[in-house]
Image (cartoon, rainbow, N blue to C red; front, side, top):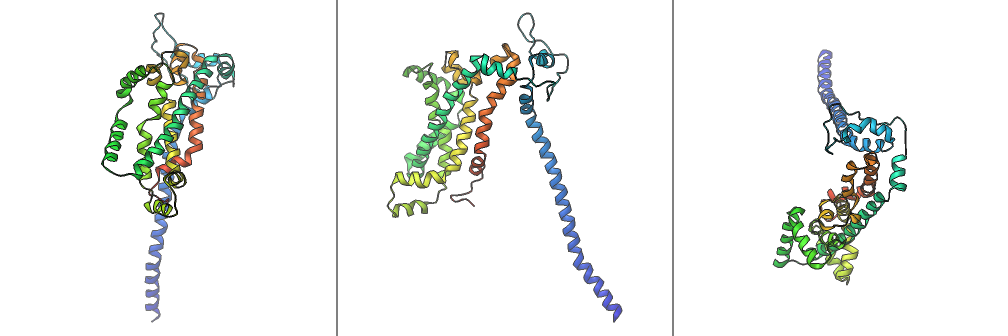
Length: 319
């Protein structure tokens, strides 16, 4: 009997311990897989961040060191063209000596860079604010009122959104010329404010707001304006902030609109002026590029939470 009891005990321990061993093995495999995935993701992130880090660190490089490391890239021939770079360029992430001469020249000695920076702000901020306002009102209208006319108008918005800006550039130029606003900020403001991109995103988001919330507000005697300001806007805060970030980044990097619709170089934004650095004071390239990056980085860091919320939204009420 004792022998049989021992055999049963061994068999019982075997069957009990087997799942535990499998569980430990699975945990080890998961840990190894997570470690590998983290390393790969970190390597890819560093690869994408390398140009930004290079730009920021090299902005503190003195003009002499800049010419020694990158002079071959910007060197020109006697005819004014670019010459072939036969040697490897020395990319330096840490300058030999930290110098603020580039920033001193950009911020205090050259009026052109600051002028173009504020031109960018004057062009982009009104477009972002008013486009969000128009899109929020239009999105609420599309959400509240159904019908064939609503479907046709919304379909037209989708068609316009799918068109590249280059397709509508000539009509915008002709309309601006007819209105007499060519070579003014209004030629860029008006097409930007009434862009269909924000209307489409906010409308699709508002369509997920539960009708029960609207009906409860109507029973309490709330009108359309109160429903819009107290229910629709607060529940759509995530997508409005996300759209604002995307609109700001899009128009901060615009190039075609100012080149076509503005003939006065004094009104050009910094995005257009950056392309002219290589033909002039090339030693200021990194400093100007760093200044150009700051607004988009600040907007993204401030609204990162809203951007994630707007992307991961799965219904009228957050899970």
